[in-house]
Amino acid sequence: MPDLNIETRPGNAHRTRLFLAFLLALLMGVTTLPGAVQGADSVSDRLSAARGRQASLRGAMARQDRLIADLDGDAARVRSALQNTNAQLDGIGDDLRALRRDIAAATAAIRRQEGRGRQLREEIRQLDTTLSLLDLEISQGAEDLDARRQAFGRRLADSQRTAQTSLLEQVLNASSFADILSNASAYEAYAAQDAEEARVIEQDQVALDTMRAMQATTRHRTDQLRRAAEKAAQELRERRVELNAAKAKARRLERNVKALKRRQLARARSIASNRRQAAAIARQHERAQHQLERRIRGLVRQAQRQAEARRRAAERRQRSRGGSSTATYGRFSWPAAGMVTQEYGCTGFYLEPRRGSCKHFHDGIDIANGLGTPVRASDFGVVAFVGWNPYDNDPAYQVIVAHGGGYTTGYFHLQSRRVVRAGQTVRKGQVIGYMGSTGNSTGPHLHWEVYRNGRSMNPRTAG
Image (cartoon, rainbow, N blue to C red; front, side, top):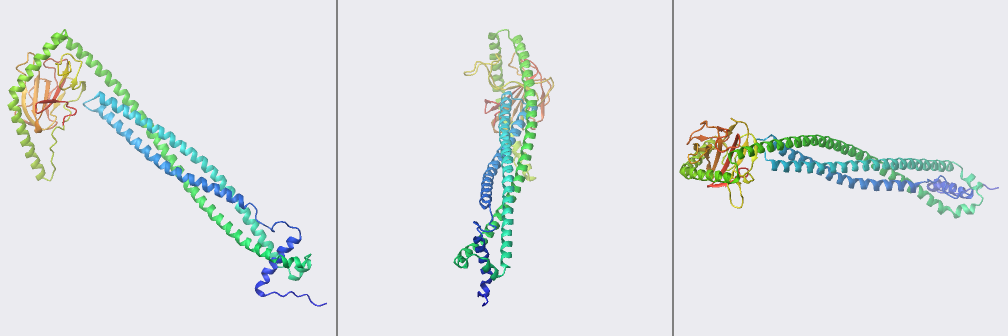
């Protein structure tokens, strides 16, 4: 019997053996590829879902950046509003109307900050949930990918064992040699599938590694957000305590001002028992002050010229030493510590004269405090007048200071202690007198006036 000899080219020997192994598997009734990797779709689906979640996380991060920026802006507004509030409370010129506005602004800013804090905590909760889902999907994807890799390895091992069987044995054990030859092209496709499967496994591994890195970055980012939220919550608690303290202090201040105003009103009734008498006193006092103003008008103009000349000389000396100009006409500082009991403008206090549409008009600001409280010059200037008003039936001791730019400031109801003299230059903040209760006064206080070119101005907004 002649030897059975199937000739093959050296380059095709290994491929032929693999073809035979595949076809032998078909002859044995195997309906799928031997060792075929299962679960590729589930891995791809999981990784695809994970990539979608991470894409949404990137969008969430951008939104959270804006939220953190808004939260920081709210915190800055809260601090600013509270600083203004505390400045009003701790200042020497309490403006209750401005104080109420500042407290309202601080309260509104805190509410906005609280709302954004709740939004940030909800964002963190959603991030934690998404991260947990991603952890599960990445873990399941890793398990599926590992199973695919192991199955692929087993199949390659089986192919290697088949390749070690002699070609004669493979042919003799086949039920149909004709089937082996006719299905050779199918085995070529099977070999190509191996290469494709290896490529897909490699791609999925790269995708899985990328998502793990993204997951670590996102978790770090979530921790940062959590710390930012905790910091914002702590600051908010501190600002809330500060705001509550400011509100309590403002309530005490308002009670004190109301009590002081009641005492002043009682004192006013003792000065004028009825409104007709009060109006007569107000008219007489206004005429007397106008007479004094006419008398010292020339002195005021002269003092203003001197004040401007002396300021310019002082500025030249400062510039020669390398300094800058300090000409800020109308930028007045507060002249005395105390509580404001009457603002500039229309008032219900009936000892004040009629002015335009106002039945009673107050042409300055009243600052109440104890007797002897220092009164200071509101700006650099020259003293134009010191003393009693000789035209007033019940005069108040006063100091008139002329400044540059046509400005004049008046300080009334002082104690009759001569601290400065007419023609004297005074610095901003220099003591020029002490709070008293001279003239038609309802108690120890300073009546502070500001004029420009002879026209009365609100001292708070002068300049």
